Image: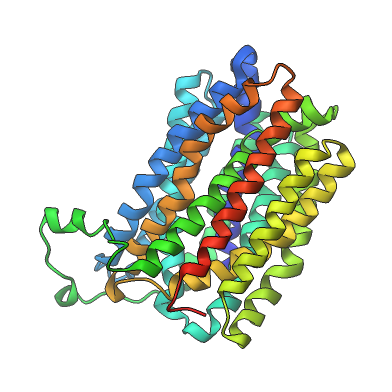
Length: 394
């Protein structure tokens, strides 16, 4: 599962961190920010719908291979195809189409993989397992960004990512412990009931609602900070090769995350505490965004990346473990985690609409990027503090 997740996150972040920005600058140099925002926003809209739908269907899949495995296979193959489409895209429309296809496939794969945690892992070990999945996400971001920046060219970067997504999924496909759903146990529901299942009432399930709100605001903060990172480095920091600089910062971010995520997850399991770890991690991530806002230099960017990695490492392991403990319905783990994923994906839709006006409000773009990171710091901290409203988990 960890290896498959590495390839999955490489497929997400190689394009997000480097390749899509380079394509936007190449196709529309005079309005690259708007193009990048359009493409990523459309992709995030697909993710917002696709992940919970794939999760809900996987909850009801009765294949002899299991409930989740068919969606891992189909999602990986779709992601590979999408990378090939993006490699040969020569227009904004085709780039947008390819990225939407990538989001559909990779999110189906993500929905199936994350549902395996509450399916198979006891609560007392979920912090540790979530920590390893946090390591996988980090390694995937590093590998995806590194491949995109190092192989030489946009086309080669996408094709390399296609190979990476496919190869890393193969061991999971061959050795999966996925459980088969007995067709007699599959609930028969109408289309209306099926669609109504995606609305999880915060009044009936308040802890799930607060967990969703926490993740939503933290991801708004992250989306505001990562969307224009390449442009921040070129326009505000003034680095000569921003794509290579993004890779360096990603590696440093990974160092910070790997140093904390497994340790924090295991520590959280041992203490039986989740909320305090989320609050502390939110404060650390807000501090990292503040560093980028007030210190727009290469040393400041390095410091911010290390601090952000340390904070997100704690958050990634503990918050996911917390979420698995407030899922409302025993038989709908993937659907409910898909609803949580809306809190991951929706900020990617909103971020371009929020970020572009902030940056453009300043005559000097560098001041605009500094203001953007200041807003990101405040939003992330508020989001982390909301976890204190959860009552059923310590």
